[in-house]
Image (cartoon, rainbow, N blue to C red; front, side):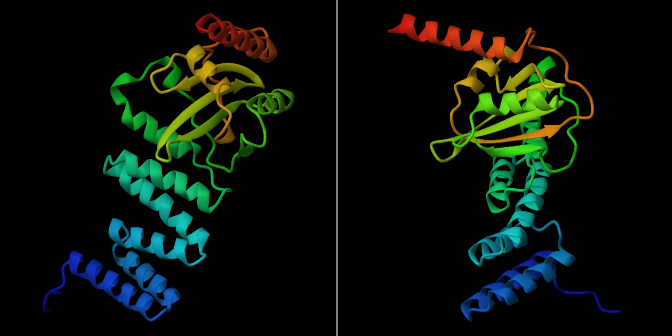
Amino acid sequence: MPENPHTPEDEIEAGLIEADLFLKYQVPHRAIERLRSGLERRPQSVRLRERLREIAAANNQPEEAARQCLALANLYIAREDFDHAHERLLEAKQHDARISIASGLEAVRRARRPANQNAFDVVPHLTPTRPVLAGELAFISVFDVVQVLENSRHTGALLITVESDGAQTENLQLHFNEGNIVGAAADRLEPLAAFRRMLETASGWFEFEAAPAPFPVTIKTTSNTNLILDTLRQLDEERGSRQ
């Protein structure tokens, strides 16, 4: 039986060319079908998935675009291309706000710093479900979110993703055990410093995911309100001393 003369790269290239031809003749649904067909044979192809993501996003198919973003994030993480993985996770959330990306962002953060893990980086595995609470800080403040979580006595992590300069992103975490703040985490910051940074944040996307086990206590306080007020007072005093 003769061998197939076409290499995997040949098949991928053919799929991309045919998809572009369908776009040229203004039948994007056929282009999407062709790329899906190609991915059935070559599911690890970043090129096919990236093109499908682009076409779906441009042709009002956000669920398909989000699905491809999540698949691409996994492929990029496997390749240790964490910048692109991070971008695709955030884009998935933009296409479909119902998607939870907290665990994916945490995986990227940990993979970027494998040699610098310390106590406040170790968190229980979050449940792979939709977030309990999510939204934009432009519409609800961190203080209001904390109060909701305190009243409902949830155990889990509040993740805040802050974008700056259109490209740079910052990930902040606040940990709760039965509604009480017990820790915080951010790149290169100790728990209290990470908590201070969170209180200074006025914009960004937040989502809270329940955890099946309590977090280690890295911030000790008698109440959430006292912790917030004491920290705000310290911040005000520091600003006043600099003026």
